[in-house]
Image (cartoon, rainbow, N blue to C red; front, side):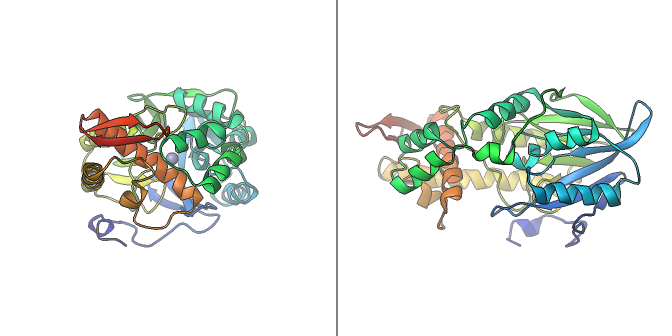
Amino acid sequence: MNAQEAQLDYPFADALPPSGGTMEVAPGVKWIRMRLPFALDHINLWLLRDEIDGQQGWTIVDCGIANDATRAAWEQVFDNELGGLPVLRVIVTHMHPDHIGLAHWLTERWGCRLWVSATDWGAARLASITTTGFGGDASAAFFAHHGLTDPEALAKVRARSSYYASMVPQVPARYRRLMGGMAVRIGGHEWRCIAGYGHAPEHIALYCATLGVLISGDMVLPRISTNVSVIDLEPEANPLQLYLDSIAALRELPPDTLVLPSHGKPFTGLHRRIAQLAAHHDDRFADVMAACEQSPQSAADLLGVLFRRRLDLHQTTFAMGESVAHLHALQAQGRLIGLTGSDGVRRFVRA
Ligand SMILES: [Zn+2]
């Protein structure tokens, strides 16, 4: 546990749901933990006791990636944890593969509807049939423009053209739209949708005032900072400011809210965590400014400043997107100016 993590409270201490099982974290709210084949090795999914139009059952929140191991883990949960009741709907917080990957299979398996923001539904449909944003030629060209010159790394990015589709082979053709501010009745309680930006196109977190619970998705995580990246699909974007504004808005929730994050353990200390994340990015902004005062810096030049550890290819592509995100935020604040050199590489200097 790092020093910041130690400032948060974990009401369930080190208890974790058993594999293929669940752990109740609030009345009618069950925690499921599934493996992921990445450095980030697990995802938390939620099973909410529900009733729709008089029918008893369950609502699933987030799905896991589409592979045999995850499907098998779900089957175990269905056998052990549903008490003979059906799944009535599938809610997805956002379009990333670990969240929406199995939505198609789950909704077909139970004959129920996917509920998701319109933006993320569209982005997921697009990403599952194209290579945009997650690999391929356009992605490699974007990274090269931001100074990534290693031919081996670029070749791997180019080759990784079906990256998203490999984890999200299909997205349901129909969905029900979630929007910020909307109230969804689940299991007799009202859950309010909170739209958040910067991590995904339109991430939906769910807050229940009666239970004092926030399903935070990837917007607020207890141990790691949320990935906020500029991708080739929207090359001039400023997602980091959107993200910082989005988490600042969560301060309106009570400080003792139980936060159910997609990665890591349920915790309380939401306001403290928001402050930690804001301070973390302020530190990174200061590092970037210091480097850009010495000499013009590309996003690739800054990897060693922002990430003081060796990165593999997967991490390098995430890190490049994050590096560009910090540069664009500082540019929008008027603190940096971006200039594209005769070599085609974009570098930033103090304004
Ligand atoms: Zn995500």
